Image 1 (cartoon, rainbow, N blue to C red):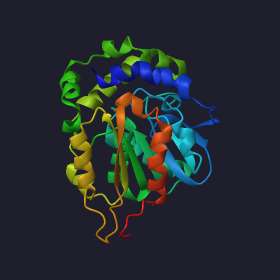
Image 2: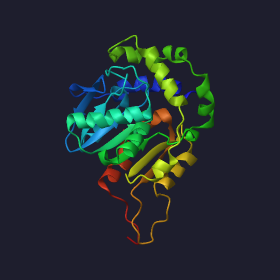
Image 3: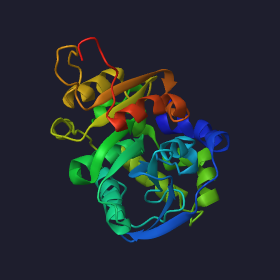
Length: 287
């Protein structure tokens, strides 16, 4: 089934299941839009980027868990949640540029980034286009190449229409927060175009020096082979116990986990995220 339609009921339900008391929201003008964001926690800065058709509450408990050790800035991207839309396509370079402009506007020189789905890919683009702004990237349920999506998903994308999404629970969730409650069809049209756009960043990923933690489910929208290939591009997949330091990037595959189920497992994700951000690794016999 379609990846985004498949997520609708699960993500809307996650609002009630995982939402915490929200911090006071703020707004800042970024590239002609009024961007909504929430700040929580103390420590080094971390940017949190949501998935397509989502908002901050739909990210669930992971925002609060990350805020236990970081000053978290959770953003709502163009046309999502309480952020206004503008007359511009939604593309990954545009989203990454918005995040970079946001960081400049609020005085963040460099930050860790957690992105989920669309937000993961936007975070990856941010690391490619603005490497000096990203300290470490947690890349959850994303791709770096269109061919990395599961075949069934790739085959379904050409059939997508605005009407398919307008009748989903995501449309009602949109109306609850959007500055323009009637703007959902325009957002859906832009996100359909985003999914259809060419995406092939292998050479740019291989050139990254930013440490990346890839997190995916074993039944995610991306194939297992794609996640392993990305890990190898980042220098991973080598043998340990050789006396040499392990690569800075890491790979975690969550068992029995689909695309929508991943974001609802904050405890399991934090078991990987915490040590990664702290630069900690299990000790072997020869360390």
